[in-house]
Length: 272
Image 1 (tube, helix red, strand yellow):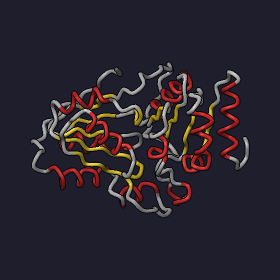
Image 2 (image 1 turned 90 degrees about the vertical axis):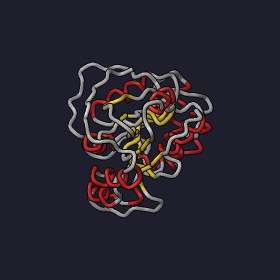
Image 3 (image 1 turned 45 degrees about the vertical axis):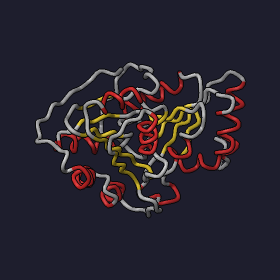
Image 4 (image 1 turned 90 degrees about the horizontal axis):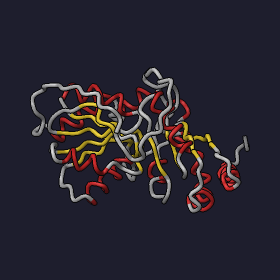
């Protein structure tokens, strides 16, 4: 506990890592902004094995705009050597924290305030393959690429509209191999994130698609380009169109001509 001294916390962790330790820096997403220079020059430049546990990623309800973790994906994914993970539930969060601790380089795991959807955690811990997403459902026409806390809301949408659903897991690196496979069997993509759209996970997907010369329409859903006031978390998500109903409405508005009749095929695929 270094008090309200985030810059010192990051450099302190870097010093511990230089001496052979494996520091875990637990910090609010919004407050890591204060240690950005140290994150780049003291951690990433030396590729030090530090795990950043980013609490309060996304909207934070009653804590308001000052505490919202709405910008971390944008300011983290541009930093060399840094891996960025987005757990979708409690068990995924545990596995990603374990993966980050075992990784020989800097890792950020962003997770929301409060409780998850209630997933039962596995007793065993397994390091995930870096940069690999997992397909939760195979559908038709479109693939929803959901990040972190948005995976749960997207499950009902994918079922209702018969769409494929992917838990992307990683913002950096993006699973380009899976994007290529999905492009071969889908006519478009939808990204959903609890983060500002500008520079966020959707932007990372757009860059990956461009780099792979994949020509498919892309709808990017996320937080708008404005500060969001305090309020009930679920109500705020609904107001911004990031609950199941809002996500479905946005997809129908953009892609109604591409959607096929509903014939669900629920698939639980093993981790790659």
